[in-house]
Length: 199
Image (cartoon, rainbow, N blue to C red):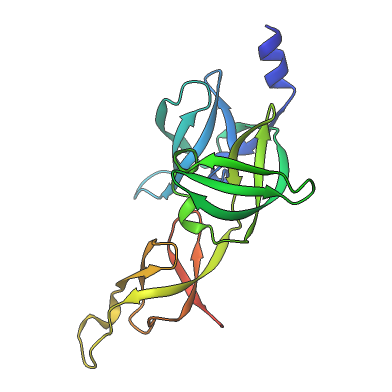
C-alpha cells in the first residue's frame, strides 16, 4: 500500500495526445515509458493516440490505443540537464552539467531516441528514484544529410520524397530538392522531415 501511495504522490494528469516519447506514465498499476507514439484519424469517430510502452519494472511491452482526450497519469520525474558525450559500445555516455559526473545509459533503454543525439548536445534526462529512465528530446533537431540520391532533372517523382541518411545513421524521407550536405530539421516524435534548416 505504501508503494501505491508513493506513486500517487508523484503523478499528474496529462491527455493522451500530449504524451511525448520518453515520458513516464502510470497505467494499470505499473510505470511505463513511452517508446513510440502515432496519431490516427479514422474516417469515423474521434482521433486517437497509439502508444507503445515499456514497463519500468519488468521490461514488458504494451501497445495501447487511447482516445486523444483520455487522461493518463504522468509520473513526476526529476529532470537533470546533461550533455551527450559519445557512444561507448552498447552504451551512451552523458555528463551532468552541474556536477560534471559522467554516466552511461544503455542504447536499448533509449529505443529510437539515440538516432537524434549528436555529441555535445544538451538533453534533459529524467530520473525516477535516482534511476535514469529516459530522455526528453527537443521537439525537433537539426542534422546534416550525409547521403541521398541526386534527382535527375525531369524525373517524374517530383511529388514524392527520397531516402536520406543523416549524420547519426537515421534514415529520413526528404523532398527531392534536399542534397547531401544540407542541414534539415527533423521531428523527434515521428522521425519525419520538417524543413530545410539554414546552415
